[in-house]
Image (cartoon, rainbow, N blue to C red; front, side, top):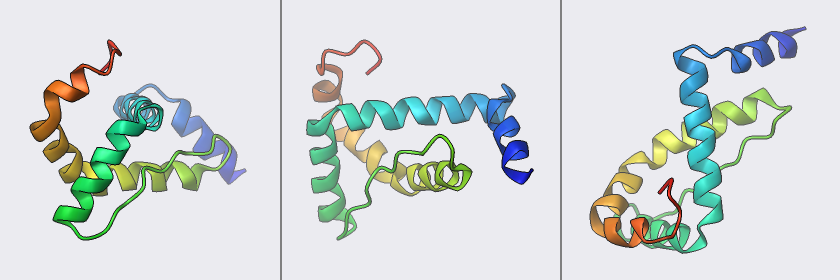
Length: 98
């Protein structure tokens, strides 16, 4: 029963549902850009001293959604620094959503 309730929450299109969709789009986009992920790993090693992987949520496991979104929040400072340093390179990936 609990999983059904959580599933309904993820389907809701309130602010949380919209942000969840945006987070999923970002995760999918990052996983499709191996060069960007490599730059992110290098940046994390040079600034934090360790790398944090971008986690992809599993559709039927609600906890994986939480962990994936939590990881995005953890990686956010590195992502922002990556954009500041490599904005032109990121935009030239050939994807309009970049």
